[in-house]
Length: 438
Image (tube, rainbow, N blue to C red; front, side, top):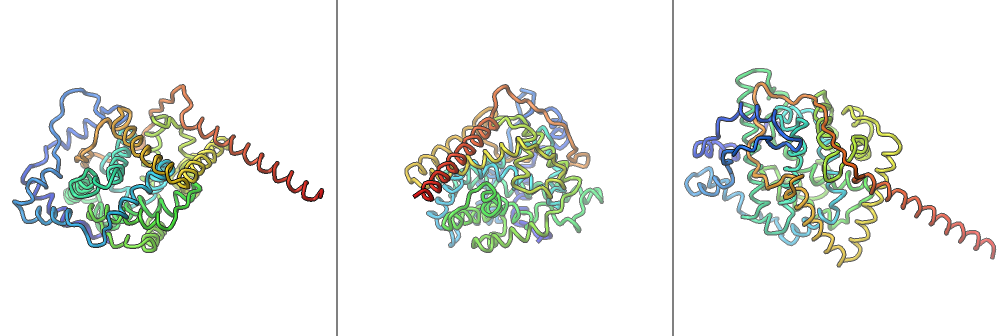
């Protein structure tokens, strides 16, 4: 599978490049990447050229070109296995467990995924995981997930999630095409024979699996959350459709059982951290340290990573070992998530209110807020590989505020949990003593 990729997406990109050639901005993009704010946006306030929206180009020219028409038709035809009611329920699952889901995506799917040696060789060549831009890139990925889960219309043809999935498909083709071209110009830049094509079918299956199967069977259970069978089926069905839209072989997600086997196989065969893995993992943590909305310390971020991925992988990624205090904070976070998720899902009216509130809050904080993306991304080709660009190890830009952030909340949850356990123990002991005293 590493030698196979989305050929239709690449052929469509070639046609779009003829219709609207990309701006020759490889060098400019590289230079601009040196002048970014902590959130990965340009410091300069000078006007930027209009971004090329590949989705709109595809839509507007689909009737004029056979290849573009084929991709457009494929993206808009609803597969027979799609059940919109199930897809909608799958969207609700994400927000029902929103806090632990985002935690799992960030610290296991992304950070743990840095242990995949082949994948990081593509990531490092884009420059998109330097400390200055990694957080912004993570927020863009989260935006795509939020668009795909915002409501049913969003994932249906013409919706924002549907459009962003097609944009991601074409973006992957652009990155693949660029890296392969550079490898032809300079042998040794990227070894296609040993690593496979960049963003190949195996990589894409692994990505969809990280967003779905890994979350269901690893990330959430390690945070004390177990999904019900129906929720698992619905969530896998949602991401099978996302796989279809992004040009990923979707048959690997035709059932929860098959998705789980794929996850286990990839974890066994693909996770083998390299020096590049350690650089990217460190840069991602540096980019998140002390940043809104959580304002978490480096040690607490590392505690999240170790809780979800285990010490062996985190040692191989070169992550620090947090002290007992930060393990206590992590335990408090797990108790908080368990209390919220299980309480709300057991009461239908509260469940519906929580899902609606989570949708609104996540979109506001991640996409609309100036401390997030500030505006919706169109997934344009801005992290452009070139021969002089690979991601290097960088220092963080910690800006911890005076307020306590997420760590104070978790400390309170841990203390309340301890008090609760002591109370239960005291009541149990009183009951036992009373029983024996009869």
